[in-house]
Image (cartoon, rainbow, N blue to C red):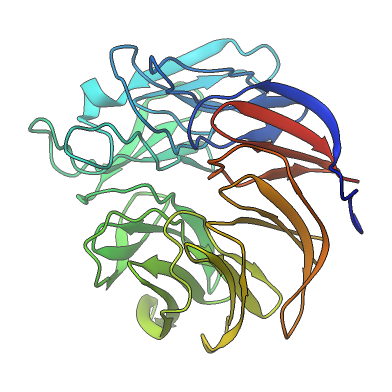
Length: 354
């Protein structure tokens, strides 16, 4: 993928999009998306991905930030080959799950489930609309039959999804929830550690693991690196550094080499993964979503401008730039081989970039 034509990429496919910022994922040759536009009904869901969020028809939502491997308020699992429904659980009725966001619940459900072993782990958060049983903000469902494997914790969730990491040979699930970042044992939901955050915002940005012992989180107007160490079998968190230079409000940063690359409202920023020192800033990239592939960055900003660039110590070297979608494009592209899947509020595009 050295470059693509200035006039644009070869368009392999085009389809109706699911509205707002639900993501696209790919498994084998089928795509899955989640839709809440107009009616809250599920959009084009072609299921070779295993678990999907579906929104109850009576819900009307202005936004859906969930990924296709998750569901709005009903968690379901389908077979990879035929899409046949195997089971589903109503998270609202059974566990008191509610949408994250404003009090009138019109901003959509954002946090994705994550697979671990034979389980699907689902962040629900604390119920906001009715009294619910304590200790079930995080649940694990069996992938085979949907039964509850465990329920744990109480927290206010946001739009950030959990991420699985490994520290000193031990698997941990990291969640950025309102007011704190927590580490959880994915086997039973037991809390392992907690690091307080200063912002009372509901987090939008999924934590980024540096493949070592560091976790990057966006806390309000600052990026913070949480360093994890192990003492006598116990994980100890501490803040290694913070930087106000990277304050992405929606797109999740990426790690490429020794730098994190992330967005502000108007710029692309590079900071050192080790020290948090500001490397460089490139203007002209408003709320840019980033994919790192083959030593290059694929950048899609909120205005639908797609850029291929090589990052360096002093800045970006642009290879190509063109406009491929309408405003607003807040969904991260998905790269599968040499096909790039992108979307705005109206369309899903598959672009041949190889």
